[in-house]
Figure: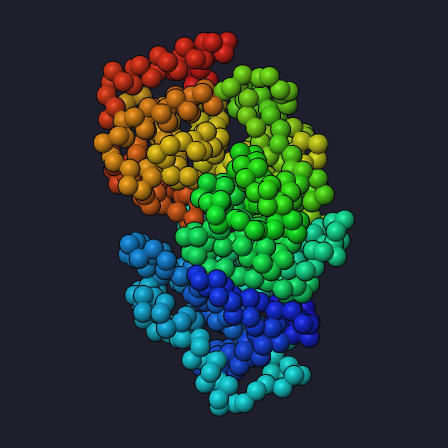
Length: 602
C-alpha cells in the first residue's frame, strides 16, 4: 500500500496528527489519522460486502465531514476508484443539478453512489436518471454495519488491495468553465508525483520550513482538486494537522476562516482570488478583534485568475492582525495535471507587471511598461511563477511550434503528473510519456515566469484584437450595486453585421431595485471604458445567482453566452438610445484625451 493514496493514510496513522472538522458554530470534532484509518478500513470491508471490487468507480457525494474520509479511503483500501462529486447546495436550482449530476455519473461509469442520509433525500432523482440499477448508499450505514459484523481490522493492513502505480487512484472532474466537465482519470503515480513536487516547493524550499509543518486550514470543497489534493492529501503526505471548514459556512461567515487560522496556528492555507476580496469586503472589524495571522506563511491563491487588486486589499485589510503580504502565493494548475503546475516564489512578494495593452492584444507581444502610463493603455497581470519539479511547461503558437519568451500563445504542460485518460472515453489511454497537454489557457513566459491571459475559448475578438474576459470583468471590482465576482464579459455575434460585440452580464446585489438598472448599466460602461478602452455594446443586469457556474463557483462564460443568445438571461439593458449615445460620446472623449483611438473601433 506504500505507493497508493490509501498508503498515505496508513502511514499517517502512525503519527500524532489528525483532522479537525468545524461546524457553522465553530464547534470542532477532532479525529486522529489513526481514527480515520480505522473508519476507512471498516468502510472498505462494507463496500466489499456490497459487491464493490477493485477498479469499480464509486461516486462520493458528501459535504465536508468525516464520512468523506471514510468513503474516499475506504475505496482506496479495496482498490475501488473514488469519484468525488459536489453535493446539492443550491436548492433553488435542483433541476439543473439533477441533470448535470446524472451526466457526471454516467460519464464516470459509477458502480455505486456513497452519500449521507440528508444528501440522499435530494440526490435520488439524479441517481435514478443516471442508471436505473445504480445504488445509492449511506456511507455511515456501510461503515457501522461492517464494524459491528466484522470487528476492528488488524493493524497489518492485510485486507488492503495492492494496486500497481499506473492504476487509477481517483477520478476528478475538470472545471467545466468552457464546456461539460470531463472525468479526469489520475493514476496513483501521477497524484503522488504531484504531492512530492508540492512538498518540495512548500516545505523544502521555504526558509521557515519547520514552522510550515505545524498546521493547515481549508474551507475549499473536497470534491475540488485544490481542496482534495492540495489540502487533504498534502496534509496526509507530510503529515500535518488539518482544520476543515464547510465551504457553505465560509460563504455565509468568511471570518470563520481567519479565526480558525488564528486559533489553531495555521501556517498554510489557500483560496481562489475571489475569497481574498470577499474577506476584505465582508468581514467586520468586530470579527477580527484579537486575531493573530502572523503564523500564516503561505497563502496560496489559484483556481481562477489572480488579480493584484484582490490580494492588495486583503493584505492591507488584515495587516493589523499580523498578516504579511509576502505570504500571498499565486499558483496555477488544472485537473489533468493532478493539481499544481506552477508556484510563485514563497520567500518573496508576489509579482505583478504592467504590459502594453495594444502590443499584447494586437501583436501578441508582452511589452512591459513602467509607471505613469495612462488608464486603458496598459494591462496588469500577476505572475503565477515557475513550474514545480517534474513538471514541464511551454507556450506554443497556432502552428504548434514553441514561441519565444514574451510572446502570447497556448500554454501546454507535460511531466509525471499528467492524467491517463478521460473516463467517459472508457479505458482509452491518456497522455503518454513525453506528451504535451494543451491546457486551454493562453499566456506567455516572461523572465521564466508564467503570466496567464485567459481561457482560449473565452477570448473575445473585437476588430481583430483579442481580449481576455477577466481583463474586462476585473474593471468592475467594487462597483456599487454589482455583486463581487458575479460578472461575465462575452463576445456575441451581431445578427446584422456578423461582427462580434462585447456584452457584459452582471448580477446586481441582493435587495437592489431593478428600477436603478439603467444607472448601473451606465456605471458599468464607464468603468469598463476607463479601464480597457472598450465600450460594451450591451449591459444586462441580472438577479443574484442568475449566471451559470461550475461546481466550484466559477462563471461558465460559454453557457452564459448561450443563455443570453437564447433569451434566458433577460433582455438587453434599456437605458435608451440617447443615454447610450451619451455614454459612447463620453467614452470617445476620454479616449481622445488619452491620445489613443478606441481599440474596438467604436
